[in-house]
Length: 239
Image 1 (cartoon, one colour):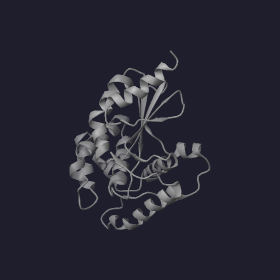
Image 2 (tube, helix red, strand yellow):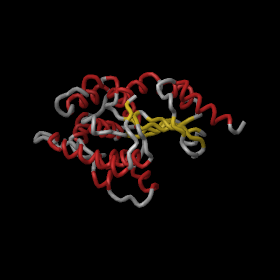
Image 3 (cartoon, rainbow, N blue to C red):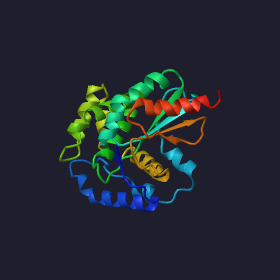
């Protein structure tokens, strides 16, 4: 699991801003793809948390009225997030999401100081979402399963992302136009800001809550039993 120090929001945001400025060259003359956060969203004034939550739209699976909510903050270039996606999330889907016990909400947390393509990947997944919710999850799976390849690219892996889009049946012309733009940069930046405001200190971070209550951070995120323990404990409270 990749962990980083809990920093005050202003300090963490400043670090991200500095990193983003350093990567401005990644917007080369052949592409207008946004590869870095919008700093006015990451570091600017936000009226209140509800405004930020409205901006930072998560991608959901499951019954919206399910008693349990499982929230994930993840970075597509994070190896630990790929591990969670491959081994733990499918068990959560089977045991809780498909059974109507929990809804699962994915939020982007592209920690750009170490992962230069994480922001672009998050935008790519949102471009896939434009063509249907199921396509987001298919692209999500493609990004994580091929992470060892695209994450080592010497330049923004636009071609790789377009090939994954083709593999899952997306309209490539529409997807490429979205990827090679700044579309969804605002939403991904708002997701990043929300993570900072919530003092999320690692990826993946998994939070479990019941009926809109306070989220409990799952320490043993790397095994289903860790999630199961928190879900079952919350479900037992009213029994």
